[in-house]
Image (cartoon, rainbow, N blue to C red; front, side, top):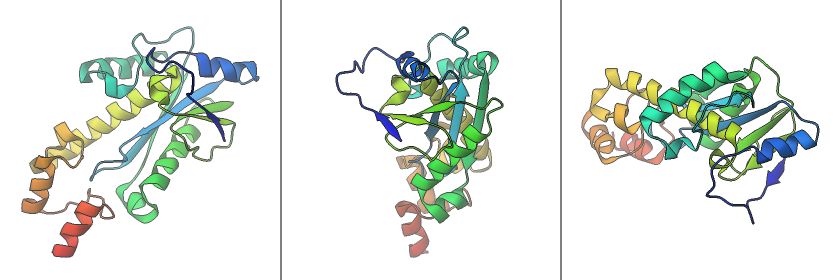
Length: 216
């Protein structure tokens, strides 16, 4: 694992090609960006995406998904799928999260996303400070979803996909408000847990859920 440090780098200018260009100078022309979403929620899987962008056809407005409106993310999700060289989405289930812990499940989802790409990348750019153990040169980038266009694209794809999934799950469990909170432990969700109880979609290894189960 090689880590791109952010010391001395402008963190406010938005994502660009600097990290992809650095890999190209090393001879790696096909680079995927990798990101995950859903480490913090009390319910639902963790989702990862891997994206290989076409530098000649980059959707306008790519950025850290958390900095974009839902409408903007939705539009970019479709544009990325239309314009990118390859897009792959994968997840680690609630059962896997409970079995191996959320960090390892996040790494597993990222490995699955990369292995699912229709085109094999020569190298990967991964958001964060820990590499998921890919079978290729990997660069981790702190706050990479706001610094690398490839990672920004992956962050948007992962978030939109998971948000849609949680809205769908929420149709069968409307008490928890998953359509708006995506499974995070907000007040409405915690109150519903006390009133209604735990569903099969809840992460039993997470402290608030474990506490309720112990009380029951």
